[in-house]
Amino acid sequence: MTKSGLIEEVAKRTPHISKKDMEVVVNTIFDSMIDALREGERIEIRGFGSFQVKIREAREGRNPKTGEPVHISAKRTPFFKVGKELKEKVDDSPDAVESAADSQA
Amino acid sequence: MTKAEIVEQIYERVGFSKKEAAELVEKVFDIIKDTLAEGEKVKISGFGNFVVRHKNARKGRNPQTGQEILLEARKVLTFKPSLVLKNILNEGDEESPDQPDGTL
Image (cartoon, rainbow over all chains, first blue to last red; front, side, top):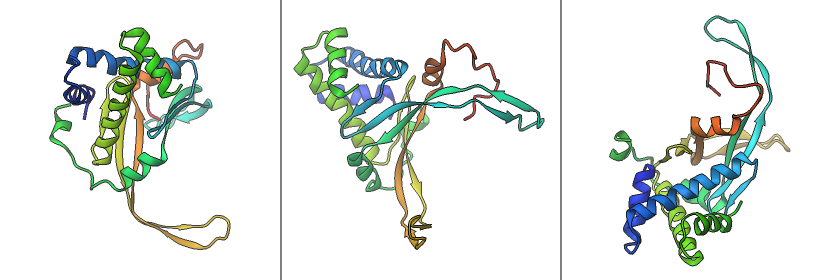
């Protein structure tokens, strides 16, 4: 499922709200989450999971092709920790379906 | 940030009532959860992909007792942040990430 698929699905379940408005809502959800992460804030969605920004330390890496050492700067990376409820639901899920919708994403 | 704060953002930025905004936020996360519970991945462009991955059974060890245990096959949810999100979190750093490889 893609974001547009998500928008469509919510719009279907809320017939009194236009798809266009639903699009704004879904975008606002993720935009506000991105804003929070940018501020270094932790996000906790009960029943779903939490997001947190962690810092990956700078390190010396190596160009795998040439073997040449390269400096890799420190960077911030978002991490997701799945909530208990969803973790259990996912474990009980049927075996991964490669939906037709995936290929057209 | 909690769900309540996301609701607040929708109330402020979009203008739905708080009650309505709360219902919509709830529905959005419910649909994401239901989709993942079906084993289907959810891809949010500009944010990241939530993917259900199958882990095979393997032998593990209780780190405290050293006793061998069998970890059963299971499915886990993983999140792969989009490049856009990773870049947003790192913009404005003096040490700009100008390395050609974006691999983690």
